[in-house]
Image (cartoon, rainbow, N blue to C red; front, side):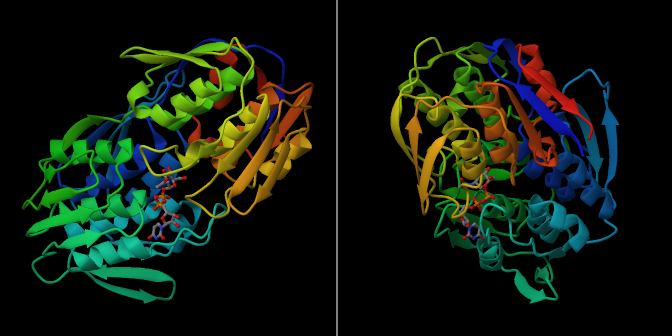
Length: 426
Ligand code: UD1
């Protein structure tokens, strides 16, 4: 297995190109199931999770063609054509490796009238149930059966009637599934307290380009007027706000200055605000965000929340940064109950962090030292790389498959701005 070697101490300087958003791509790809016509997605990041999802689409008989696959390019253009579906089953072996597979449930149900998806298992960052996905589909008229570890959703003859669902808690994935099911329903559907993450807006924009009728895009109340059929489209995946935020933390922890090319400041509000409160200068224009850390970092209290609050996907990276900030910070995780697994590893690098339930108390600034570390999830792994960039000596990060799920060519991008980082085979 590969490992990353990070030698800390270099101030990052220069430009990092930001890739297409993983979390958007994983909900845009299953939209191909909604139409017989080709769907072309541009700016798809090259990531293990995307490859896995492509594999799943192949399982349903979707043909896939990849263009512009030069190794030196970031991203690629992929066309999906689901002219005829040959299966409506997402098997255990594929779903187990990738939780986002559950996102085929809504579109497959809408298009084929039924879908069978293996239940995603427990996950390193908490229980992550799918009850709200199923309740929303039931509210739209689907019948749900659970048997032998699989969820089977069946639409009445003639298709889903549509309906109303009020989410008791904001769920990104359940909102996505519900939207993809409602667009082809016979009637009008309404979603209340829906997630309004930028990735949901990206999904609504693609669905609209395919001929869907959605009102309230960007708000938490969505009205979807079902249409008989959807057409194909060509669509550019939005920039990855979490990747951009992660590199902003990397630049800040080294006292550097980095331009994040392609990042959109308006979609990164809470993260950029947190950085500014910590003393990082943030500048932006229509095409990029630049962060500059030329003052000592200050402690601050942060709480994760659904968008427009601070993304849970930024919690671990910001925690690394807070370890170098002057004073005591309190970090609360409100989305997942078990998302502090990076804490013991950061402690091994010299961080002073105490946790109690979903609250972490971070005391800084600490002198960090390199260590052998490994993380159990994607963003936790990134927090270790960020700490390694500011640590004295060498940090070895193992279990790179987590990072490869979500960061396109991480070490190359960090090398571009002067980081001393390399990937080694074991
Ligand atoms: C969540 C994050 C998303 C992030 C992703 C990967 C939020 C609101 N969502 O999305 O930003 O990119 O993780 O880290 O920040 N829940 C249920 N029943 C369900 C579905 C969810 O109880 O059927 C609960 C979850 O346990 C959790 C909350 O709702 O406490 C939000 O979960 P959800 O948004 O669905 O998770 P993801 O879609 O994975």
